[in-house]
Image 1 (tube, rainbow, N blue to C red):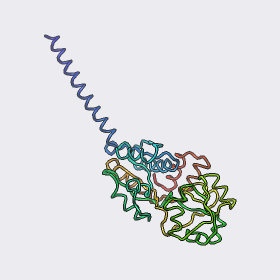
Image 2 (image 1 turned 90 degrees about the horizontal axis):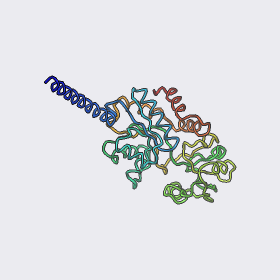
Image 3 (image 1 turned 90 degrees about the vertical axis):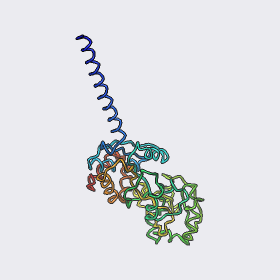
Length: 300
């Protein structure tokens, strides 16, 4: 009888242990899937250096706001990391307003900064939101040497009537907002278009005056290292590409969102250009560069 009772008590104890274990396991899984309740925030990035740099700045700022951050960088192309955000495995990712709008609304004709930003909430899937946009942009642009700018060429409008050679990626010659757009919007024509890949060859040809205008991305390091001037675009031919945090609404609390808004309020295109020079030319570690920026701007 004593043996039977002992066995029964042991069985009950085992069952209770299994129940507690099952509950704990269930809670653990729930905690992993609910970053907001646990305080964990997964910050992702695309697979290029600037995205990783901004993602690291976001991570530092969130940690300063008390979040436990998991970094999941180098996810891949927009199609890949957007799926991760939509599914909830990533809570925050740096985005660019124009690219984000046209990802969900390919036929959008908007290009001005505020118009583009204001249109995004209407096309995002349920559960996603954008926070404040920053002044910083990485967009298409045309650059000239400092000497050319000093001669009176400081805007796309100033290219009208010039007998300049334009160099850029092959597709720029036929893109709507490329050579055809420059002619339609600004009345600009070129003596010649030369197909050149972005990089050292463009740098060489612009500095040697083989071309007088180069297609650039506005934060690329060559602009800083060569003291080039990016021409103003008063008619917004090139779609705005303000840096903006894209987030899962249910994964961040208000304090964490405010920390990211603070980053956006501080970040400028010149900041990005200087940091990208440090990362791509001086070979500074991305995490070290981001940490230095966060400390300098008191964002952490």
